[in-house]
Image 1 (cartoon, one colour):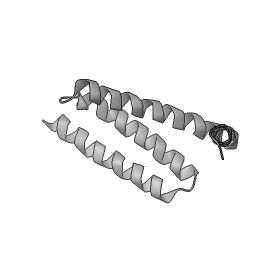
Image 2: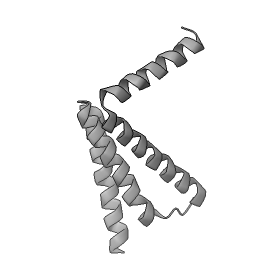
Image 3: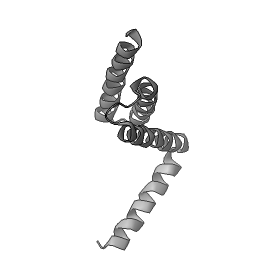
Length: 98
């Protein structure tokens, strides 16, 4: 498979994913954008990122990804995002309690 064939196959896979569940597709894109935004914010403000502001967005995007993983019947991804959401919630509570 050459690069063009690989690119075309990827585009077809994205189209199939979109048509199989449009709501999930858009939720995954939204969660991905939130994730990238949080990561950029951490990088810009390192070594002291505003975690009190970021944690709710980390939790939101992980919860969205967990839902999407559940709709795909992907136990591994679901468990991963559920655990990350829980860890981030604990971090947010610790900051809030300070």
